[in-house]
Length: 60
Image (cartoon, rainbow, N blue to C red; front, side):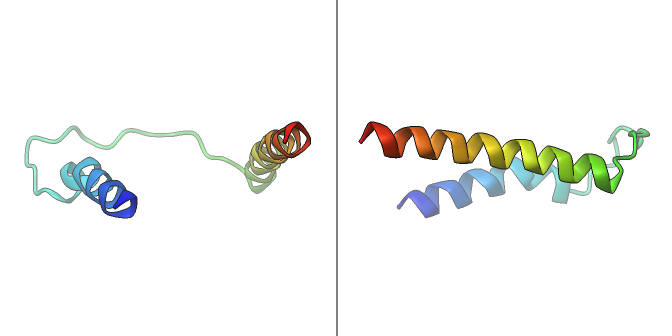
């Protein structure tokens, strides 16, 4: 049931992206992210997840 709810929520959130909206805003420029910056960001997220997992494991 959770998967169905999450799938429906994701579909509703993505619906405007799939709509053929002619009044959409023009695309804007975004800064590029280098591979090193991307890997560093993933390392930070991974470290936080592992830290939270370890704290929960020790608390149990």
